[in-house]
Amino acid sequence: MRNYAFLLAALLALPVYAAQPRLEPLPDIPPPPGMVDPSLEPRITIIQRGGDRVEEFRIKGRLYMIRVTPPHGHAYYLVDQRGDGAMRRYDDLSPNFQVPMWVISEF
Image 1 (cartoon, rainbow, N blue to C red):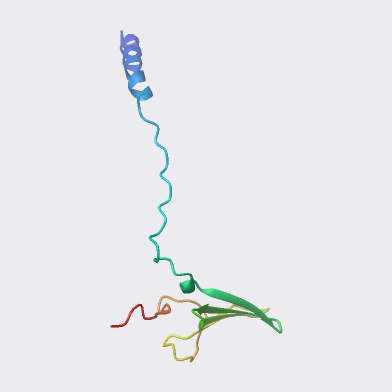
Image 2: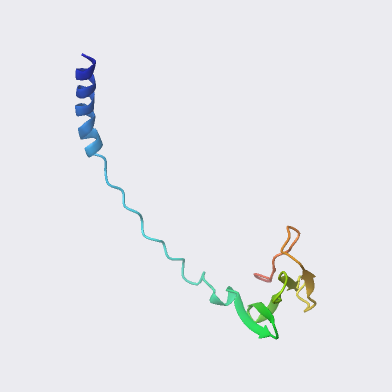
């Protein structure tokens, strides 16, 4: 009797399973016009100086961070936190590292 009840329940559930709609992924929504500013993308210049590899990070042409990777040892960072051109050395990007900030708009 149990086998018949299970078989009957499975047969009744089959049309419900087959009737479920097929879901398709939605296309990506493009950003609104004027919202994407390619000048805010960081530009990275890689330079070989002797044995050191120097990576310069710029936004809108302004240098805000330099990563120096010596041939032997760990990389270190020189970061301009205040925007005045004075670089401060960091041996790693620790939690107290401040990301570059710039003015979005002025009144």
